[in-house]
Length: 333
Image (tube, rainbow, N blue to C red; front, top):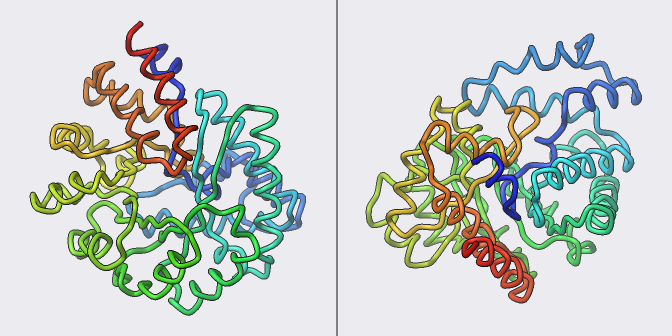
């Protein structure tokens, strides 16, 4: 199964670039930029990875960001992830980035996106990994800040395919950002939102994503299974759900294998992703292998999950059909 998973060309739709910041890179960049993070070695950084819920993870996540200071830092962060992606036979990625996590530290929007974009170009040319960037707003910041960053993004519209919403969900419902997402849609951006696992009011948040925001995808979305009508509506709209098994295990102490299989049986379109792989110590293939180890997933189930990722991606139809054709060839072998 490990060889089968490795052989499949894959898409990844839920990976935070800041979440691919490996401890060795955090330590080296902090040293290079004169940033004191309070850790004596990369091993000490890993030892601090004591995540048991979303807030405990975010506390460390934002602290590590301080090591990122220059355009070259963002280039190196992004290109290093694409090298990992290529090693996992990922051919297409829609990575997230969190500009507010950097502008709030005095780093310009241009510094962030120029470094990321250069790495995207080089990765496509050198590694064969195509990508389209998604800008996320931090939901525990104000809607006014989100709108400000939407405005900052407009000169770079050709470099950004869509917008998302992430960070601490508690008391930060989708409706808080309705005006921002309405404006983003008007500007031509595609829309997705995080609905993290087992958060306060999570089922109502997912309904808001569908009925009030009209998203084109849902990030996580496991708790949709608590409402049969919600599942039916998600299936009817053919909305993708970007599930992250290993990060789920850290946050809610289960790989959610039963839930993923239930989604498949209900005709929903779950996809498998790595979320913040440097922190959860598992890239995309590791997440698929976790489904086999902890859920006894079959080759046909794995293949369906991979196909789902391409089907719900924001690729142009010609590119999407090309990748799906390659998977169909593998299916008949």
